[in-house]
Length: 253
Image (cartoon, rainbow, N blue to C red; front, side):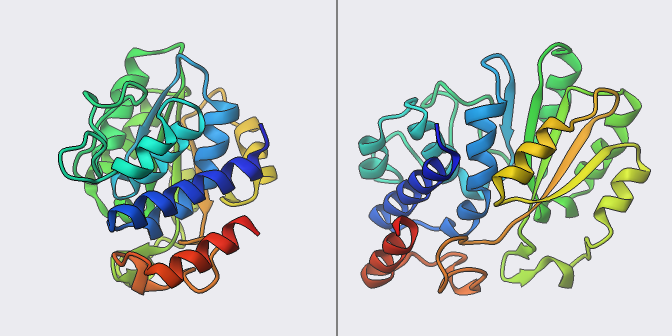
């Protein structure tokens, strides 16, 4: 399966499902698409676990699973976030069979991932968080804990899109030395372009067998749509019909 074509299809599905339902957070979803594409197509074994802690962007998980034939794509596009339908904004375990955890407050996904990594020694546990979550103290407790327990089956991916709600993350709590801090805590840290499949593949091939791993993926919100990239207006806003058609054209051109 071609990574580029698959990521294009996932972006198209996200755009259609959110515009159809007039819901929000498409901005956040697009920054995670390429990492999710590689993770589900190439890296994840059937028995591995994936914890999607970036719950504002559940649409990317839905769309990725649809591309993997785990959800009917047309049903997803036409029923996502619609009244009396099962595919809600937040994924729930009782409606989707192919997820390992349901939605929660930000910062709690890594807690669940740590527990799984402790108990499932022969299985990899991937946890996708985003840089906003790094402000949560619970995250730093586990950043201290995982190296102590030598959880080499734990792979944390940080979607570093540098945006926190309506502000830049650096204006709230600066994370420009994040890699240095995590390295000092005895993590294996790699920083990559989160939209470059060669770099993504390189990072997964260089995972440490002795330490817990963190991949810091530098990303752009609304990647592939020029008038929406890093445009704070689209944090909550649903594209109108003209914007929808423009975005669809750019994604598929």
